[in-house]
Amino acid sequence: MSPGWSLPTLIHGADGTELPRRIGTLTQVARIDRFTEEEGAARGARRLRMITGGGLEVEVHPDRALDLGHVTYRGVPVSWMAPPGISSPALGEARGTQWLRSFGGGLLATCGLDTFGPPSCSGGTEYPMHGRVGITPATLLEADVSGGELVIRGEVRQSTVFGENLLLRRTLRAQIGSTMFSLEDTVTNEGLETSGHMILYHVNLGWPLLDERAALDIESVKVTPRDDDAAAGVARWRSIEPPQEGYREQVFLHDFRHTPTGRAIIDNPALDLRFTLSFGARTLPSLHQWKMSGTGHYVMGLEPANTNHIQGRRSAEEAAVLPQLQVGESVSYQLNFTFGPSAKEQKP
Image (cartoon, rainbow, N blue to C red; front, side, top):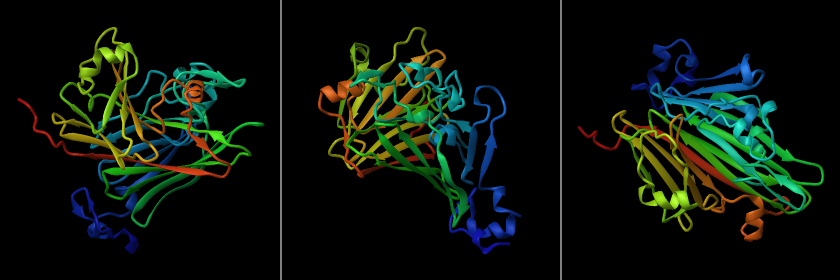
């Protein structure tokens, strides 16, 4: 047996140094599985499953910018899955609002790299809803378990002739035995001129973590409703309500400027389960909360972004708030996804 199996951590409640005595292979408790989809709209697409050995399983989709699909903790699903499912990027259309036809939900759908929000047109260039990166396949550079760590690493390039050339380098990491994982992104402008850069991390939480027994906490300094529907519900932005017929989505903008770390929590004492999303607020100073309590579309979106401007690329340009990347410039983002027991007592 390899001495590398002796780990200074707990694995399913046991001392990790005991592993060589108790298992025949490390894959019994921690591994990265690889799949190729065979049926339906996902046919031909790659899928990875990261199993940490701490009760956490994370599905990663290399052909959709290394975004995240189904995620379970101790067997409990935590991510919302949309009706289209996570399909092959070949079915995605980068125009208008067609993003909605290939939005499969999942724990993370990346929006950008040059726009997010509603579609718009500027300078003869079409900027589709939530951008193009989410239907762009990654070059997978690493998917391995070594040194007590699970690592998935890849690159996604969004580029065009006579336009932007943006490179996203993404790394997902989890310690063996851990109940958390991190996402580290670096976006570099490899083009020949300054490029507008907008990015939003569309994190989608669903039932059974999300229900009226759960509590939401977002540690922002200011909350602004997006529109009249949100303004009507702003006093209840923290409330997690049961599914309702005819519910109109509400979006709230949370300000994290002048705060080093942003944090949002959903705690469900009935499941004894707590989810914490934390992120570096110096480069992600805003979080867009998507509250959607409709029947069949029952989801809470917690969406860190590099700007609180939510009306699309053209609107950001006109308001002079479009983030810019100079030639050769890079910007980095970090998000941590942490799972654990509830910190609240269950009400009788």
